[in-house]
Image (cartoon, rainbow over all chains, first blue to last red; front, side, top):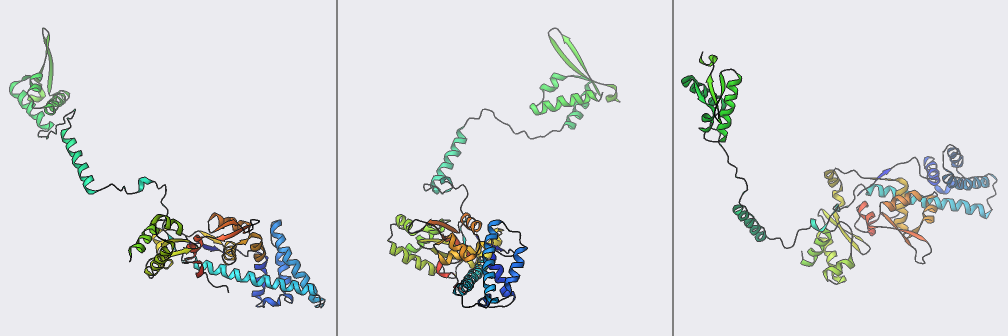
Length: 237
Length: 161
């Protein structure tokens, strides 16, 4: 995975100081006499810093002020002050090295080595079983096929080819009624070849009755009831 | 490619992370010196290929070569997570001074580095350990830093300027 760099304005007091030095094109060793102290103090006063961050800035500021006052007073023989300037110079030099290396890292991170991704929720089930062979799969398939062949289905489904349409059935019924005038509905249904055809004839009877082309007459003879289909006037005209 | 070399290549390819040489030794029954020889050969075989062998202390990882990082990232539609300048500075300090303590890091940067250290720990780019005398927490880089920078080993870190 690679990382890109978020460039903040600056990351700390040393970077702020370094920026002033670089802007003025000064050598780091000139820190004791440079005018960057004023710039640093001015910039620091404008920063909105948390107390802890402020400590770090103030520490550097105090060093700068002490060094500057030393220069102004021209009391260069004081060992402590020289040490302080040297310390700050060294600190800046060291910081600059790592700031530059951070920039190198940022460039390098644009071309990372990419590791193989880790599988999410990987379990042993994701792994290929060691006992899996072509023969094993083949025999399992054969067994499955023979099981299917031997199985007795509870319900047998019959695919019926639709050879006749309802409009044809209506025409047949109309013709029959025109020829004979009446017919027994039970006989009509019983003479069909299969359930599908019986349903079609029943629907045709309902359609003819609904459109008023036939009449359905109920006749009772003893225990039996009979439904007689009779051609209506509009059918015969 | 000799069988032993190919075997190690296969094992490393199968693992998404770094594999320690002791694990390779335990599982392949090969001697450590032979493993090291084979890995050297593997490194040579992989020269100019799309993969590279990354070495971190006693661990190894096969990864897509940094030369093709951008092509792979484009293919994967992945965007790189971001590291702040502060985090990169801390990373550089740790990489070149490890093991290094937080106070040493802050001394060099001249500023608090708590958040940056926490972020780098969370991304597993650095780890914290106890120093030799077990009196202080110090930080070291991980193998993930090498992959993040596309380096085959810590020796390939750029020279300090």
